[in-house]
Length: 517
Image 1 (spheres, one colour):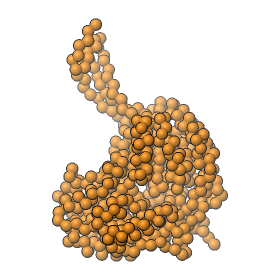
Image 2 (cartoon, one colour):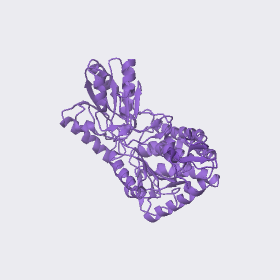
Image 3 (spheres, rainbow, N blue to C red):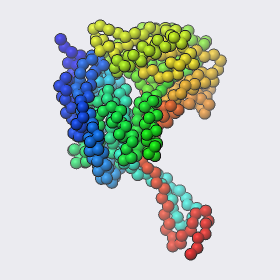
Image 4 (tube, helix red, strand yellow):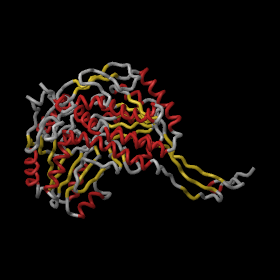
């Protein structure tokens, strides 16, 4: 019998990435400091063991931190454009390994192969962005109130940047952080999700080649594997001035408190409860495409996944029928088969959360329009495949107020003006991504205004999911307030310094203060 892994060339892809054959149980290519217990990585695609990696002990962690700290001493003195050249070479390696790494992302995490390739493309894109940025880490010049004085500001590297990433984007979010941190002169210590450790090993193997080829210290990029206890070592470590953490709001609150207690900096990308407003002036066809992909892409396991569809009562039935009809066309199965739209959830725990959400929405008075359920039988042996579900609900339902990391879409009805819809959209604790579907210019501009969406991302005639790297990515409220990727997000990876230069022979004081001796 030919396995899924054999059929889609996973063994060859893993070997290309420096990870030995499936079920060999190897940690080859991992940071050589690791001496802890073995961590097994099972694929949600077929339930098979892919490989094992060693977790990091406290002793291992100390060795990693020493290596990273030493590397920073020399790396920070390298001119930024030269650091950009290192990132450029990393991007080239990613281009050569895009197919293999994309397959691994799909097989270890469960997202569709096209989304796996897309995630690696995000890594390539942020490298390109960072290369150009390496020549633009500029400050400002300011006029001094004192004669014969010049003022300006500049940015310096922070030091060791700690990165804690989530399973749903096992490689892209790391690259968002590292590409910018590296051109800023920082070194990075990365703890990938314990649910996708092999993606971390693969990325470390790729950057390790670049580091070796350029005779740079290996501590520029460090990998540590393990559970939350390893993350706790990072968040409480004063040697790490910045912790970038992606995950649940619950996790983010723990990280934020730990980092704040030592007056460190944190960059938090947490939960989302994203909505699309559909007004009477919406293009229904565009709405269906945006809403369905937003709700079922990555099996609803994106922080930007569409959770709520807020539809005006005058077109509610029409939109509802179109969405329900579209769900009937979805193909669920092996994500490496590009004929399928929806792959599995990450693990059985995620399946339980999905089932609980559907039970709760009914218990609170909601009505299921598209039945959910766990799929079984041939091709679904892992037990992680579920049916994308749709339910009519109310925004006040407790289950609607919380993020369910699964393909469950809630339809909400609004009446009156778009202001009422905006109030519903903003009426949750999270504030990541939002969208409005309308051809009415006034509605669109109001949605983007100061009284409109309270989210970090607000789109018009685009869904909530699928951000480009050129813009700053992040959200407000319980989403954490962090910003990654494009725009001026690079500034959080550096420390700002204001400089005043006196080029006269006297020493006047600011604010006209006299102090004569």
